[in-house]
Length: 167
Length: 312
Image (cartoon, rainbow over all chains, first blue to last red; front, top):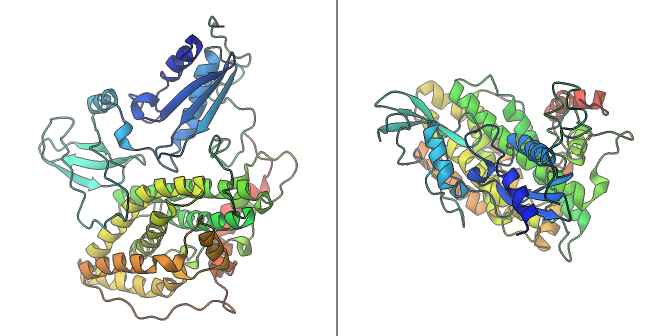
């Protein structure tokens, strides 16, 4: 990797998620590749978390602004749809940052090859309360404040919290 | 070449928003992510007819767009906050699928994109969404009906997501890279939609007499539109033959099997109402829609149509 590419990568790796600002796009697994073509033309590949995630436009603008601010004149942000994003790409550092911010990190993503079995019971997860670490938690809703989160509550300390759901 | 110093853009202090906006033109009614398929391989696979691929992507995209809009009408109107958020999330996932699919259609055959005034900043997928008439939409009729009560939303999301998930499970093997990628992503999203609506279906069926009554009314009202989901339109047949699409008839057994699991768990018998007829045999896939779609589009499209040059 050239020094220029390395520098572009370091700049891109500073950009954080607009809705989970404790995570960089690397922690989230959204930033897939950074490459420099010629002197100052940067090509960045990102993979959307959810098809309709409204944060994608902001992520792109933030990447362009950071890289242009660092002197890269031409910044191209490309969308990489294949393979699809999975919560398994959230880094250990990202998981620790989520937990520190009171958000329960995801468990392993389920396999999605073949027919997806119907699940009529609430999804069984081993979720610990990010506030008091109690394992006594219950699911409130599979859909939360953003597309990627479910709502939980802790039955020990009674605090509600978000859980990043496995996909 | 490695010694650039960060230099602020010249217009940095012109407005409070200049730091946030990096592009010159912002289409007023979109999210401004210039091209949702930027960098994606949109080459049409060998032996595939571009217009057929585009027409097929429009069908899948219109299903998602119209369904998304109807579900989004629940935002701030659902019975409780959790379900308001859930329905809004489902609508958002489908809108994202619609955006990619309509963009795919535009790339496969640009003649499907309505012509806008010179200089309009509307991207192709928004032109397709906002500047077509009802008869140009190819969505199945289930998606366009006026909303009813919460039981109606539960049944509608259940029927739609059972069918669409069965379709997308197979579409993952599409020879078209974009459709395969949209399906791979969509399967994960639709699995959450299906489980959400299936659990509510069982809950309402086994709740109070009133919740069960309302659920059965909703199921009877929507059931006549279930068979239309499995009709094979010539475009779908051609797309399936060339390996880019899925023949709806081929997913009927799988979809019925999943639906029967839900009905069994809920203790609800399979309805017997006959299918809703088309008009001279034509249905949603042929552009033959009910009055509800025209009214929905009038509301959805009016602002964009009044300002085709809209920028901010």
